[in-house]
Image (cartoon, rainbow, N blue to C red; front, side):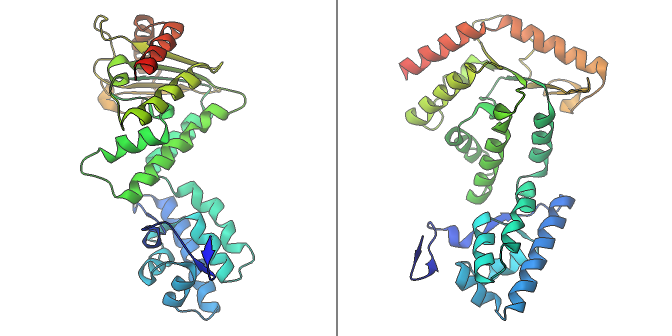
Length: 291
């Protein structure tokens, strides 16, 4: 929306046109530097100073310089407004296709690429709800709780990245997705009653998908191989696989078949000890009724 032709943004957003660039992300740095250089050339060709341009798009001069220097990842709204102000006929707005691929942290992008290729994903979580299953509100509460705290801008960036990974549920053909969650985190009402109810409802919704298996590991069970941390396994169409466990192989991703068999054995044992999918959904429904 606008008033008298001037951009109006939510409180605080005028000072936050994008996210900081990770200097260790070579591809991301290259893309954002290229976009920033293009913005600067078009601004100068239009005869606008940085302060004048910033006033027209609703951002401060200092942040305009940061975007043009490739030190800040612009949001889509920034590029759309810049395209309009500079009469770029869609040239600047089109750069969003490249920018959106690098707006998330490198590690999350790499994980998302693997998940997008996998035909089978198995995850065991012992302390939190798995990221692929989280609502935006729940994810935000978890990320905000980290210490040292992230800036509000970084929090939103990480929430967006986590939600983007959930496109795995929309893939066609659908991958097989298996989740085992410890019972204890299901009792922790992160974010308050309403946020927690939405999270439980989300679990029930996803647990009923034809390609999703959701199980709960009850707290009154015997010891199991997942007590020392998270386990994730991904299998790909070419027969290869990758896995990682907090409590094995130094927590590093592994591809060696012998090591993968160890993780598969542990994950299989965990699934065998957990409640059945039907009993797990009934348990979550009971929790929802008590919330």
